[in-house]
Length: 424
Image: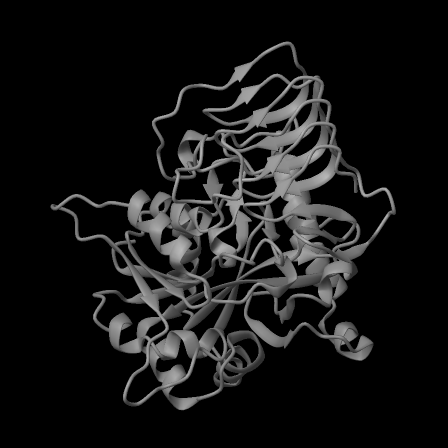
């Protein structure tokens, strides 16, 4: 795997994850209490012995850059690296990235310097435990110019992913990006003989193969494709172009995978981590998720009824009840408070410095006798006493002053101060 480089796409605006993307890009969003979404593709690469990693960024990338610089270090005897590639104004190119393929194309002068035979294109906003070594072995065995990672999907997902059709040798014969027409979906549906061949890999509702947005290109194939086809998106444009040339294979993945594209998917994936048997496994020594290290004490919990919770280091919990929650680092919750089905991202500090966030009180905490249900509390938020956040009006979507609702989930934005007795 030393001859493979990962290229992680992290530059999208993340409009469907707003307001979490109000102050940062998608890959920089906190996940699971102590990780960032970018840690998933980086960790999977490192666990697969891929130590040459490019991260392409564009929108609100400062937080992401800071996290990567503080987290990932290679020793002086290693040839590995993580290189951050931000959108640049160049004499020959003076526009922002126009799409996934355009982002890679605009950075070709950096990529071609990597001494590798394959480029692995990854997304910065997905969850999975993927051993890319198996995918590379498959690509080498089939001698495919391009290998697409795919997994069986039901009808409910077929219209939001790329959908592909394969033959019995796992060669891709047809592809459509997010097909909406029923006749196209019917054309791409797995035939009975292939469904029988895939057997146990399919559940009852899985009748299609969905692209995971993970592409393994031979070096020359990628460089030629980006040069010959000047369109901007891999799924919509370049994958169909390469398919016409032929020699495209499908690597069938049978593990957990989730695209964190909406507030709902982000919320459910986080809370699933707190349950007894989560779909995404962070407790596996062979598939560790790496992140920044903080010199914080273990969490303190006083007289609290806890059911299904992740409580990260540095937290001080005196709440009455916690039920299905993820609490980030330095979370402080006072007496009498009940929190159910919630993500609290925690704090970057216990007390704001004098020159910073001076609209906040001296202590960042969730006050006494509060009730919080089905909510996401972003970082560095202070909530006063007797506050209720339960979406009383039952909004599906709502835009307020530092309080939003998306998919029926209440979201309090970063750095907000909610006064005593606030109700929503």
